[in-house]
Image 1 (spheres, rainbow, N blue to C red):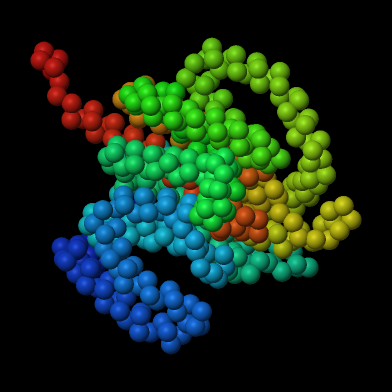
Image 2: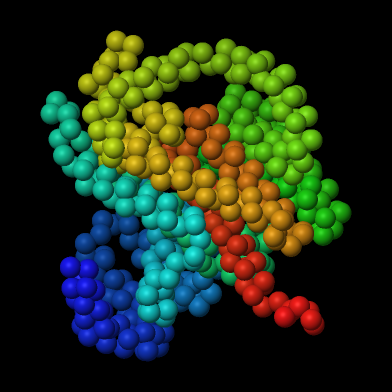
Amino acid sequence: MTNLFSFFDHTLNQRVFGPPRRWLADKYPAWLPPLVIVGVLLLSLALPLVMPPRFWPLLIGLPLAVGAILALMRWPPLGLVALLVTILVLPSPYLPGGFNLAVLLLALLVGLWLLHAILEQRGTRLVPSRTVKPLLGLVLVAVLAFGIGQLPWFAAASMAPLDAQLGGLAIFVLSVGAFLLVAHQVRDLRWLEWLTWLFLALGALFIAGWLVPGLGGITSRLFQLGATSNSMFWVWLLALAFSQAWLNKRLHSGWRLALVALVVATLYVALGPSRDWKSGWMPSLVAIAAIVGLRSWRAGLALALLGLWQARNIFSEAIASDEYSYSTRLDAWEILLEMIKTNPVTGFGPANYYWYTPLYRIRGYQVEFNSHNQYIDIVAQTGLLGLACVLWFFWEVGRLGWRLRTRVSPGFAEAYVYGALGGLAGTLAAGIFVDWFLPFVYNIGLNGFRGSMLPWLFLGGLVSLEQITQRQASFQVPEPGTV
Protein backbone atom coordinates (compact mmCIF):
# COMPACT_ATOMS: atom_id res chain seq x y z
CA MET A 1 0.00 0.00 0.00
CA THR A 2 2.85 2.38 0.85
CA ASN A 3 4.56 1.67 -2.47
CA LEU A 4 1.30 2.26 -4.33
CA PHE A 5 0.78 5.58 -2.57
CA SER A 6 4.35 6.63 -3.35
CA PHE A 7 3.85 5.71 -7.02
CA PHE A 8 0.72 7.86 -7.36
CA ASP A 9 2.33 10.71 -5.40
CA HIS A 10 5.40 10.63 -7.67
CA THR A 11 3.26 10.45 -10.80
CA LEU A 12 1.06 13.40 -9.81
CA ASN A 13 3.97 15.61 -8.77
CA GLN A 14 6.33 14.81 -11.64
CA ARG A 15 4.00 14.24 -14.61
CA VAL A 16 0.76 16.06 -13.82
CA PHE A 17 1.61 19.00 -11.56
CA GLY A 18 5.35 19.06 -12.16
CA PRO A 19 5.51 20.61 -15.69
CA PRO A 20 3.11 23.50 -14.93
CA ARG A 21 4.88 24.28 -11.67
CA ARG A 22 8.29 24.12 -13.34
CA TRP A 23 7.07 26.43 -16.09
CA LEU A 24 5.73 28.92 -13.52
CA ALA A 25 8.96 28.73 -11.55
CA ASP A 26 11.14 29.20 -14.65
CA LYS A 27 9.18 32.29 -15.68
CA TYR A 28 9.03 33.70 -12.16
CA PRO A 29 9.44 36.55 -11.34
CA ALA A 30 9.05 37.86 -14.91
CA TRP A 31 5.34 37.10 -15.18
CA LEU A 32 4.30 37.96 -11.64
CA PRO A 33 4.68 41.79 -11.53
CA PRO A 34 2.55 42.32 -14.67
CA LEU A 35 -0.02 39.89 -13.30
CA VAL A 36 -0.21 41.81 -10.02
CA ILE A 37 -0.58 45.14 -11.83
CA VAL A 38 -3.30 43.84 -14.16
CA GLY A 39 -5.10 42.19 -11.26
CA VAL A 40 -5.14 45.37 -9.19
CA LEU A 41 -6.39 47.43 -12.16
CA LEU A 42 -9.22 44.97 -12.71
CA LEU A 43 -10.08 45.10 -9.03
CA SER A 44 -10.10 48.90 -9.15
CA LEU A 45 -12.72 48.74 -11.91
CA ALA A 46 -14.81 45.96 -10.40
CA LEU A 47 -14.83 46.73 -6.68
CA PRO A 48 -16.79 50.05 -6.89
CA LEU A 49 -19.63 48.08 -8.44
CA VAL A 50 -19.96 45.74 -5.44
CA MET A 51 -18.53 47.72 -2.49
CA PRO A 52 -20.56 50.16 -0.36
CA PRO A 53 -19.55 53.79 -0.88
CA ARG A 54 -17.92 54.04 2.58
CA PHE A 55 -15.22 51.59 1.41
CA TRP A 56 -14.38 53.49 -1.79
CA PRO A 57 -11.53 55.50 -0.18
CA LEU A 58 -9.69 52.20 0.16
CA LEU A 59 -9.44 52.04 -3.63
CA ILE A 60 -7.22 55.12 -3.66
CA GLY A 61 -4.50 53.09 -2.04
CA LEU A 62 -4.53 50.31 -4.61
CA PRO A 63 -1.78 51.78 -6.85
CA LEU A 64 0.39 52.26 -3.77
CA ALA A 65 -0.42 48.71 -2.76
CA VAL A 66 0.89 47.46 -6.12
CA GLY A 67 4.25 49.14 -5.59
CA ALA A 68 4.39 47.93 -1.98
CA ILE A 69 3.70 44.32 -2.96
CA LEU A 70 6.39 44.37 -5.63
CA ALA A 71 8.88 45.86 -3.14
CA LEU A 72 8.01 43.22 -0.54
CA MET A 73 8.56 40.48 -3.11
CA ARG A 74 11.98 41.94 -3.87
CA TRP A 75 13.04 42.58 -0.24
CA PRO A 76 10.89 40.38 2.07
CA PRO A 77 12.35 41.65 5.40
CA LEU A 78 11.02 45.11 4.56
CA GLY A 79 7.59 43.64 5.09
CA LEU A 80 8.47 42.80 8.70
CA VAL A 81 9.64 46.38 9.30
CA ALA A 82 6.39 47.67 7.78
CA LEU A 83 4.41 45.20 9.89
CA LEU A 84 6.02 46.41 13.11
CA VAL A 85 5.19 50.03 12.28
CA THR A 86 1.65 49.03 11.30
CA ILE A 87 1.14 47.12 14.55
CA LEU A 88 2.07 50.07 16.74
CA VAL A 89 1.14 53.29 14.98
CA LEU A 90 -0.85 52.82 11.76
CA PRO A 91 -4.58 53.43 12.26
CA SER A 92 -7.06 51.28 10.41
CA PRO A 93 -10.38 52.20 8.82
CA TYR A 94 -13.41 50.30 9.93
CA LEU A 95 -13.31 46.78 8.54
CA PRO A 96 -15.88 44.01 9.08
CA GLY A 97 -15.29 41.42 11.78
CA GLY A 98 -12.73 43.49 13.67
CA PHE A 99 -10.06 43.06 10.99
CA ASN A 100 -7.49 45.83 10.79
CA LEU A 101 -4.56 46.76 8.59
CA ALA A 102 -2.02 45.00 10.81
CA VAL A 103 -3.88 41.68 10.53
CA LEU A 104 -4.36 42.10 6.78
CA LEU A 105 -0.69 43.00 6.26
CA LEU A 106 0.41 39.93 8.22
CA ALA A 107 -1.90 37.76 6.10
CA LEU A 108 -0.47 39.35 2.94
CA LEU A 109 3.12 38.74 4.05
CA VAL A 110 2.39 35.11 4.87
CA GLY A 111 0.71 34.66 1.49
CA LEU A 112 3.61 36.25 -0.40
CA TRP A 113 6.10 34.11 1.51
CA LEU A 114 4.22 30.92 0.62
CA LEU A 115 3.92 32.01 -3.01
CA HIS A 116 7.63 32.78 -3.17
CA ALA A 117 8.48 29.43 -1.55
CA ILE A 118 6.30 27.46 -3.98
CA LEU A 119 7.40 29.22 -7.16
CA GLU A 120 11.03 30.16 -6.67
CA GLN A 121 12.19 27.39 -4.34
CA ARG A 122 9.95 24.78 -6.02
CA GLY A 123 8.48 23.62 -2.76
CA THR A 124 7.86 24.93 0.72
CA ARG A 125 11.07 24.14 2.58
CA LEU A 126 10.67 24.95 6.23
CA VAL A 127 13.73 25.68 8.32
CA PRO A 128 15.09 22.59 10.06
CA SER A 129 14.14 23.70 13.55
CA ARG A 130 12.51 21.69 16.32
CA THR A 131 10.14 24.61 16.90
CA VAL A 132 8.34 24.07 13.60
CA LYS A 133 6.63 20.73 14.26
CA PRO A 134 4.56 21.85 17.27
CA LEU A 135 3.42 24.92 15.32
CA LEU A 136 2.31 22.84 12.36
CA GLY A 137 0.55 20.60 14.84
CA LEU A 138 -1.21 23.62 16.37
CA VAL A 139 -2.48 24.74 12.95
CA LEU A 140 -3.76 21.25 12.17
CA VAL A 141 -5.47 20.97 15.57
CA ALA A 142 -7.05 24.43 15.18
CA VAL A 143 -8.42 23.50 11.75
CA LEU A 144 -9.68 20.18 13.13
CA ALA A 145 -11.32 21.96 16.08
CA PHE A 146 -12.95 24.39 13.64
CA GLY A 147 -14.47 21.47 11.73
CA ILE A 148 -15.59 19.65 14.87
CA GLY A 149 -16.96 22.92 16.18
CA GLN A 150 -19.69 22.78 13.54
CA LEU A 151 -21.29 19.88 15.45
CA PRO A 152 -24.19 20.75 17.79
CA TRP A 153 -22.46 20.08 21.11
CA PHE A 154 -25.25 21.73 23.09
CA ALA A 155 -28.70 21.51 21.56
CA ALA A 156 -30.03 24.35 23.71
CA ALA A 157 -27.45 26.88 22.44
CA SER A 158 -26.32 28.03 19.02
CA MET A 159 -22.70 28.13 17.94
CA ALA A 160 -20.80 31.33 17.23
CA PRO A 161 -21.37 33.08 13.88
CA LEU A 162 -19.12 31.82 11.13
CA ASP A 163 -17.20 35.10 10.84
CA ALA A 164 -16.30 34.94 14.55
CA GLN A 165 -15.15 31.33 14.16
CA LEU A 166 -13.04 32.22 11.13
CA GLY A 167 -11.58 35.19 13.01
CA GLY A 168 -10.62 32.91 15.89
CA LEU A 169 -9.07 30.40 13.50
CA ALA A 170 -7.16 33.21 11.78
CA ILE A 171 -5.58 34.21 15.10
CA PHE A 172 -4.11 30.72 15.53
CA VAL A 173 -2.93 30.45 11.93
CA LEU A 174 -1.51 33.98 11.63
CA SER A 175 0.32 33.73 14.98
CA VAL A 176 2.14 30.71 13.61
CA GLY A 177 2.67 32.60 10.34
CA ALA A 178 4.26 35.56 12.16
CA PHE A 179 6.79 33.26 13.84
CA LEU A 180 7.64 31.45 10.61
CA LEU A 181 7.98 34.70 8.67
CA VAL A 182 10.79 35.97 10.88
CA ALA A 183 12.37 32.51 11.08
CA HIS A 184 12.57 32.23 7.29
CA GLN A 185 13.01 35.80 6.07
CA VAL A 186 15.50 37.27 8.55
CA ARG A 187 18.72 35.74 7.26
CA ASP A 188 21.03 38.58 8.22
CA LEU A 189 21.65 39.80 11.76
CA ARG A 190 21.30 43.38 10.60
CA TRP A 191 17.60 42.92 9.85
CA LEU A 192 17.00 41.51 13.34
CA GLU A 193 18.84 44.52 14.75
CA TRP A 194 16.66 46.85 12.68
CA LEU A 195 13.48 45.23 13.98
CA THR A 196 14.67 45.37 17.58
CA TRP A 197 15.93 48.97 17.54
CA LEU A 198 12.83 50.16 15.70
CA PHE A 199 10.59 48.54 18.28
CA LEU A 200 12.59 50.02 21.16
CA ALA A 201 12.62 53.47 19.55
CA LEU A 202 8.85 53.46 19.06
CA GLY A 203 8.38 52.10 22.57
CA ALA A 204 10.55 54.89 23.97
CA LEU A 205 8.43 57.45 22.15
CA PHE A 206 5.28 55.93 23.63
CA ILE A 207 6.71 55.97 27.18
CA ALA A 208 7.89 59.56 26.69
CA GLY A 209 4.28 60.49 26.02
CA TRP A 210 3.48 59.54 29.62
CA LEU A 211 6.24 61.72 31.05
CA VAL A 212 6.81 64.73 28.78
CA PRO A 213 4.16 67.47 29.08
CA GLY A 214 2.35 68.07 25.82
CA LEU A 215 3.73 64.97 24.10
CA GLY A 216 1.03 62.67 25.47
CA GLY A 217 -1.65 64.29 23.34
CA ILE A 218 0.34 63.34 20.23
CA THR A 219 1.35 59.82 21.25
CA SER A 220 -2.14 58.95 22.46
CA ARG A 221 -3.42 59.57 18.93
CA LEU A 222 -0.39 58.05 17.23
CA PHE A 223 -0.12 54.69 19.01
CA GLN A 224 -2.84 52.11 18.59
CA LEU A 225 -4.65 50.99 21.73
CA GLY A 226 -4.89 47.42 20.46
CA ALA A 227 -1.11 47.16 20.69
CA THR A 228 -0.21 49.19 23.77
CA SER A 229 -3.08 47.97 25.98
CA ASN A 230 -1.87 44.38 25.59
CA SER A 231 0.73 43.35 28.17
CA MET A 232 2.75 41.72 25.37
CA PHE A 233 3.89 45.20 24.37
CA TRP A 234 5.15 45.99 27.88
CA VAL A 235 6.73 42.56 28.41
CA TRP A 236 8.78 42.65 25.22
CA LEU A 237 9.67 46.34 25.51
CA LEU A 238 11.16 45.79 28.95
CA ALA A 239 12.74 42.41 28.15
CA LEU A 240 14.56 43.60 25.02
CA ALA A 241 15.56 46.99 26.46
CA PHE A 242 16.83 45.46 29.73
CA SER A 243 18.83 42.70 28.04
CA GLN A 244 20.48 45.04 25.53
CA ALA A 245 21.31 47.60 28.23
CA TRP A 246 22.84 44.99 30.52
CA LEU A 247 24.45 42.48 28.17
CA ASN A 248 25.27 44.22 24.89
CA LYS A 249 28.74 45.41 25.86
CA ARG A 250 29.54 46.24 22.23
CA LEU A 251 26.91 48.96 22.28
CA HIS A 252 28.13 52.51 22.91
CA SER A 253 27.86 53.46 26.57
CA GLY A 254 25.61 56.39 25.71
CA TRP A 255 23.06 54.14 24.05
CA ARG A 256 23.25 51.68 26.94
CA LEU A 257 22.47 54.50 29.37
CA ALA A 258 19.56 55.52 27.14
CA LEU A 259 18.22 51.95 27.35
CA VAL A 260 18.62 51.99 31.14
CA ALA A 261 16.59 55.21 31.19
CA LEU A 262 13.94 53.52 29.03
CA VAL A 263 13.72 50.56 31.43
CA VAL A 264 13.44 52.84 34.47
CA ALA A 265 10.84 55.07 32.79
CA THR A 266 8.77 52.07 31.65
CA LEU A 267 8.81 50.56 35.14
CA TYR A 268 7.83 53.93 36.59
CA VAL A 269 4.82 54.17 34.26
CA ALA A 270 3.86 50.53 34.83
CA LEU A 271 4.16 50.66 38.63
CA GLY A 272 2.93 54.23 38.98
CA PRO A 273 0.13 55.58 36.76
CA SER A 274 -0.72 52.07 35.46
CA ARG A 275 -0.32 50.18 38.75
CA ASP A 276 -3.98 49.05 38.77
CA TRP A 277 -3.32 47.07 35.57
CA LYS A 278 -1.72 44.04 37.24
CA SER A 279 -1.54 41.91 34.11
CA GLY A 280 0.52 44.67 32.52
CA TRP A 281 3.38 44.99 35.01
CA MET A 282 3.49 41.60 36.74
CA PRO A 283 4.53 39.64 33.61
CA SER A 284 7.09 42.36 32.85
CA LEU A 285 8.74 41.82 36.23
CA VAL A 286 8.77 38.09 35.54
CA ALA A 287 10.58 38.77 32.25
CA ILE A 288 13.30 40.84 33.93
CA ALA A 289 13.70 38.30 36.73
CA ALA A 290 14.08 35.50 34.18
CA ILE A 291 16.84 37.38 32.32
CA VAL A 292 18.73 37.99 35.56
CA GLY A 293 18.31 34.39 36.74
CA LEU A 294 19.38 32.87 33.43
CA ARG A 295 22.43 35.09 33.18
CA SER A 296 23.64 34.66 36.78
CA TRP A 297 22.30 32.02 39.12
CA ARG A 298 23.63 33.95 42.12
CA ALA A 299 21.84 37.14 41.12
CA GLY A 300 18.80 35.06 40.26
CA LEU A 301 18.80 33.41 43.67
CA ALA A 302 19.09 36.78 45.41
CA LEU A 303 16.28 38.16 43.26
CA ALA A 304 14.14 35.08 43.97
CA LEU A 305 14.59 35.47 47.72
CA LEU A 306 13.71 39.15 47.48
CA GLY A 307 10.72 38.26 45.31
CA LEU A 308 9.48 35.65 47.77
CA TRP A 309 9.77 38.19 50.55
CA GLN A 310 7.71 40.70 48.61
CA ALA A 311 5.43 38.30 46.71
CA ARG A 312 2.92 37.88 49.51
CA ASN A 313 2.44 41.63 49.91
CA ILE A 314 2.29 42.23 46.16
CA PHE A 315 -0.30 39.54 45.47
CA SER A 316 -2.33 40.39 48.57
CA GLU A 317 -2.47 44.02 47.48
CA ALA A 318 -3.31 43.05 43.91
CA ILE A 319 -6.16 40.76 44.91
CA ALA A 320 -7.51 43.09 47.58
CA SER A 321 -7.76 45.97 45.10
CA ASP A 322 -9.75 43.87 42.64
CA GLU A 323 -11.26 41.12 44.77
CA TYR A 324 -14.61 40.91 42.98
CA SER A 325 -12.96 40.54 39.56
CA TYR A 326 -10.68 37.73 40.76
CA SER A 327 -13.49 35.85 42.50
CA THR A 328 -15.74 35.97 39.43
CA ARG A 329 -12.88 34.73 37.27
CA LEU A 330 -12.42 31.76 39.57
CA ASP A 331 -16.14 31.03 39.14
CA ALA A 332 -15.76 31.29 35.36
CA TRP A 333 -12.80 28.89 35.35
CA GLU A 334 -14.74 26.35 37.40
CA ILE A 335 -17.69 26.50 35.00
CA LEU A 336 -15.53 26.27 31.89
CA LEU A 337 -13.59 23.29 33.23
CA GLU A 338 -16.91 21.56 33.80
CA MET A 339 -18.04 22.47 30.28
CA ILE A 340 -14.79 21.24 28.72
CA LYS A 341 -15.49 17.72 30.02
CA THR A 342 -17.99 17.40 27.14
CA ASN A 343 -15.13 17.35 24.60
CA PRO A 344 -11.72 17.72 26.24
CA VAL A 345 -9.73 16.39 23.26
CA THR A 346 -10.42 19.02 20.58
CA GLY A 347 -12.60 21.54 22.39
CA PHE A 348 -15.55 23.34 20.82
CA GLY A 349 -13.75 25.17 18.02
CA PRO A 350 -12.70 28.84 17.81
CA ALA A 351 -15.09 31.28 19.53
CA ASN A 352 -17.87 28.74 20.15
CA TYR A 353 -17.68 28.23 23.90
CA TYR A 354 -18.66 31.88 24.48
CA TRP A 355 -22.11 31.08 23.10
CA TYR A 356 -22.47 28.02 25.31
CA THR A 357 -21.74 29.78 28.62
CA PRO A 358 -25.33 31.03 29.22
CA LEU A 359 -26.27 27.37 29.77
CA TYR A 360 -24.33 27.60 33.05
CA ARG A 361 -25.29 30.13 35.69
CA ILE A 362 -22.51 32.30 37.04
CA ARG A 363 -23.48 33.92 40.34
CA GLY A 364 -27.11 33.32 39.49
CA TYR A 365 -26.98 34.98 36.04
CA GLN A 366 -27.28 33.37 32.62
CA VAL A 367 -24.87 35.53 30.66
CA GLU A 368 -22.15 35.10 28.08
CA PHE A 369 -18.60 35.29 29.42
CA ASN A 370 -15.08 34.31 28.41
CA SER A 371 -12.39 32.51 30.37
CA HIS A 372 -10.04 35.43 31.21
CA ASN A 373 -7.30 32.79 31.21
CA GLN A 374 -5.17 32.01 28.18
CA TYR A 375 -4.65 28.34 28.93
CA ILE A 376 -8.27 27.48 29.78
CA ASP A 377 -9.24 29.45 26.69
CA ILE A 378 -6.96 27.32 24.47
CA VAL A 379 -8.44 24.10 25.87
CA ALA A 380 -12.01 25.36 25.44
CA GLN A 381 -11.33 26.20 21.79
CA THR A 382 -8.85 23.52 20.65
CA GLY A 383 -8.88 20.98 23.47
CA LEU A 384 -6.02 19.33 25.25
CA LEU A 385 -4.45 18.66 21.85
CA GLY A 386 -4.17 22.39 21.19
CA LEU A 387 -2.76 23.09 24.65
CA ALA A 388 -0.23 20.28 24.21
CA CYS A 389 0.99 21.82 20.93
CA VAL A 390 1.29 25.28 22.52
CA LEU A 391 3.25 23.98 25.51
CA TRP A 392 5.39 21.80 23.24
CA PHE A 393 6.24 24.85 21.14
CA PHE A 394 7.17 26.96 24.16
CA TRP A 395 9.33 24.12 25.47
CA GLU A 396 11.17 23.85 22.15
CA VAL A 397 11.67 27.60 21.71
CA GLY A 398 12.88 27.90 25.30
CA ARG A 399 15.22 24.97 24.75
CA LEU A 400 16.51 26.64 21.58
CA GLY A 401 17.18 29.90 23.42
CA TRP A 402 18.99 28.03 26.20
CA ARG A 403 21.33 26.39 23.67
CA LEU A 404 21.93 29.62 21.77
CA ARG A 405 23.15 31.45 24.89
CA THR A 406 26.64 30.04 24.48
CA ARG A 407 26.70 29.75 20.68
CA VAL A 408 25.89 33.23 19.41
CA SER A 409 28.45 36.01 19.20
CA PRO A 410 28.79 38.47 22.09
CA GLY A 411 27.02 41.78 21.75
CA PHE A 412 23.60 42.23 20.20
CA ALA A 413 22.96 38.54 19.44
CA GLU A 414 23.75 37.34 22.96
CA ALA A 415 21.64 40.08 24.52
CA TYR A 416 18.80 39.28 22.11
CA VAL A 417 18.78 35.62 23.16
CA TYR A 418 18.49 36.52 26.84
CA GLY A 419 15.86 39.13 26.03
CA ALA A 420 13.83 36.58 24.07
CA LEU A 421 14.07 34.08 26.93
CA GLY A 422 12.90 36.74 29.36
CA GLY A 423 10.12 37.72 26.98
CA LEU A 424 9.11 34.07 26.74
CA ALA A 425 8.86 33.82 30.54
CA GLY A 426 6.83 37.02 30.68
CA THR A 427 4.56 35.82 27.88
CA LEU A 428 3.85 32.56 29.70
CA ALA A 429 3.17 34.48 32.90
CA ALA A 430 0.82 36.87 31.10
CA GLY A 431 -1.35 33.91 30.13
CA ILE A 432 -1.83 33.23 33.83
CA PHE A 433 -2.25 36.89 34.78
CA VAL A 434 -5.25 37.20 32.46
CA ASP A 435 -3.69 38.50 29.28
CA TRP A 436 -3.32 37.10 25.80
CA PHE A 437 -0.70 35.81 23.39
CA LEU A 438 -3.53 34.11 21.44
CA PRO A 439 -6.42 36.58 21.81
CA PHE A 440 -10.02 35.46 22.14
CA VAL A 441 -12.30 37.06 19.56
CA TYR A 442 -14.91 38.03 22.19
CA ASN A 443 -12.32 39.65 24.46
CA ILE A 444 -9.57 41.80 22.94
CA GLY A 445 -10.18 40.16 19.55
CA LEU A 446 -8.43 40.99 16.31
CA ASN A 447 -7.73 44.55 17.43
CA GLY A 448 -5.79 43.23 20.42
CA PHE A 449 -4.03 40.82 18.09
CA ARG A 450 -1.87 43.81 17.14
CA GLY A 451 0.00 43.48 20.44
CA SER A 452 -0.15 39.70 20.52
CA MET A 453 1.83 39.48 17.28
CA LEU A 454 4.92 40.78 19.09
CA PRO A 455 5.95 37.62 20.99
CA TRP A 456 5.55 35.49 17.87
CA LEU A 457 7.67 37.87 15.82
CA PHE A 458 10.49 38.23 18.33
CA LEU A 459 10.53 34.53 19.26
CA GLY A 460 10.91 33.82 15.54
CA GLY A 461 14.14 35.79 15.81
CA LEU A 462 15.62 32.93 17.86
CA VAL A 463 15.21 30.58 14.90
CA SER A 464 16.79 33.22 12.66
CA LEU A 465 19.77 33.38 15.01
CA GLU A 466 19.94 29.58 14.99
CA GLN A 467 20.14 29.51 11.20
CA ILE A 468 22.62 32.42 11.05
CA THR A 469 24.87 30.74 13.62
CA GLN A 470 24.78 27.44 11.74
CA ARG A 471 25.69 29.13 8.45
CA GLN A 472 28.56 31.00 10.06
CA ALA A 473 29.89 27.77 11.57
CA SER A 474 29.70 25.96 8.22
CA PHE A 475 31.69 28.73 6.46
CA GLN A 476 34.45 28.95 9.02
CA VAL A 477 37.85 28.01 7.58
CA PRO A 478 39.59 25.42 9.76
CA GLU A 479 42.96 26.33 11.17
CA PRO A 480 46.07 24.61 9.74
CA GLY A 481 46.61 21.20 11.23
CA THR A 482 43.03 20.78 12.48
CA VAL A 483 41.81 18.80 9.46
